[in-house]
Figure 1 (tube, rainbow, N blue to C red):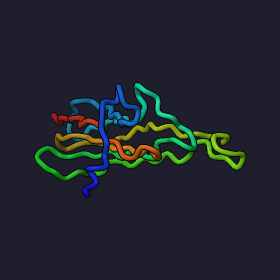
Figure 2 (figure 1 turned 90 degrees about the horizontal axis):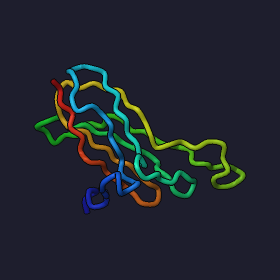
Figure 3 (figure 1 turned 180 degrees about the vertical axis):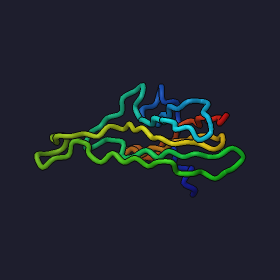
Amino acid sequence: MALNNYIKSGDFKGEKHVPVIEAPAQVAAGEKVKIEVSVGKDIAHPNTTEHHIAWIKLYFIPEGTQLPYEVAAVEFNVHGESPAGANEGPVYSEAEAVVVTSFKQSGKLIAVSYCNIHGLWESEEKAIVVA
């Protein structure tokens, strides 16, 4: 079976696992752009030792191609682990990141996240127009 058989999707407003991409719809060629990726935007995702988002990857697919470029891979490595026990730790990472990039041509962004309990989830495509 292909990997796409295991990637789930949905609307982030109704499904807490779906990654969200926040980016401008139009940019100038070469302009630095801040892109935010997160999980749990409208419905909070648990962030515990037992149930958490481990990573988010952001891809760009240039217009007219099928070739995805991995723009960023962000790991969230601490979820309350501690020698004192689960969820007793002094620090928790949150499933949010800001990526700064620039574009030479139009295309679309796609994000994929990984929940340690519920697997892989993909975002809706986010178009980026280079003007």
